[in-house]
Image (tube, rainbow, N blue to C red; front, side, top):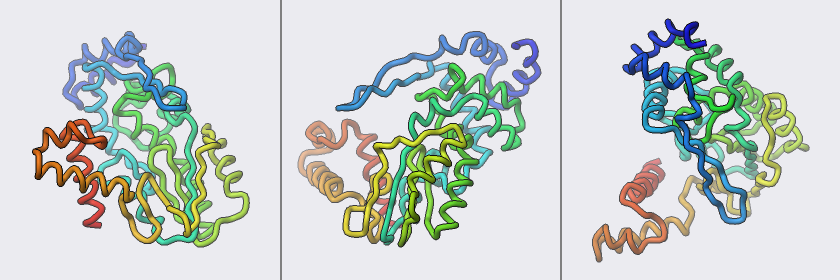
Length: 284
């Protein structure tokens, strides 16, 4: 296999400014370049992460930035692509009678290497899709923890996005997706919408996470990827209060002490992320 892809390796190495030897080394034993560990969650099964080591992570980030981002996901996919965000994902669902959200079960593990290769071929990638898949997949699926997995999952889901968008248009609904979180909204919802979404996912090798479906009427808090959308996009009131409190604490006690006392953030980078999110939403 390695000998057959030597020309492809040389081409890829020159495109991402990495040595051929480094890529060949990865291909020989890709599993040895991952560390598997669980993330414990309250009242939920642990989520297993397969994190690439530093060397592989560098290669994957270069693949993402220099090659993979050249293939655009479906326009209604709003996660993990430049210019898209939880804000752009939430905006189409403002001021609707009904909002309903669905989750894909085991999104990354359900995205197979074969599906990744097919999506890269469809995207007319200039480099060998098989080689890219070998560097980005683990045990024939996308690993949760690799920087390339979210975008590759977006690309593999493209055909399913097309079907879901067609369904939405047929029923005068808006549709968006952020990673494994799909949202539909409108003034009326069609009968058996859950069954239709379930069947559509199955045709693309995915399953519906049945217990995570949420139906939200106008008289309830309608939330899309954590943002309120009843009339316009807003941060949840509890989060706004916490941000306001930590801003006041920073003025009084300084940023280091404010972060140490906060239940919202543990670092300055996290804090700046919340400030940036608030500013982005207020600007919108």
